[in-house]
Length: 193
Ligand code: SF4
Image (cartoon, rainbow, N blue to C red; front, side, top):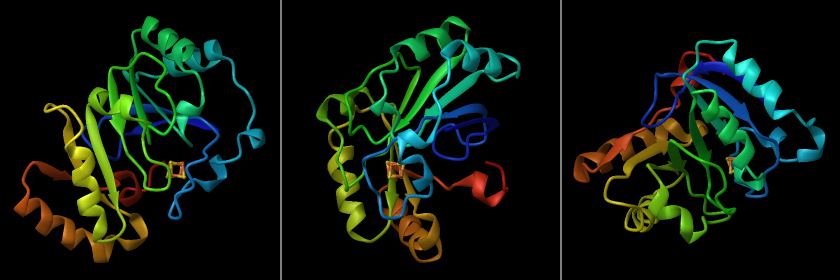
């Protein structure tokens, strides 16, 4: 759908330079989705893997974040193998709702209520990032925190449109449950893609 060099705005790698490749297609259907234009894969052109890798290599990027849409609707073995062959770190942002493919240096699992993750990805996640839209999402987040590996980093992120209402709840929740950390969509505050 699009690709751009920017800063990672969310989660564990927040603030780091990263090249984003946003793949088209999503059938998860989050009501608050901020990239609904990604949902229809047929509205976006195919790209050659070699062209994408060469475009990334024209920048000093060390990390490539594959996002969407739901990137695991695509088979990602070739893309990630070529990125790693070019000495780039491969990160993914996924709901986990489709089978895991690809070779990953970092897996950020962001489960969605609208189409829950498949069980296989849970022990593979390096980072669990739960978007909090209402109070019941804290309990839902804990269900997944209980299923990821002990080393997995845990993040709670306010849904952007409800941030003024939800962020204070997250702050209080983290103070009571310090295994969690706050993730903010930094890129939206500093106006970068
Ligand atoms: S999984 Fe991501 S792209 Fe798909 S609907 Fe949800 S927020 Fe949007």
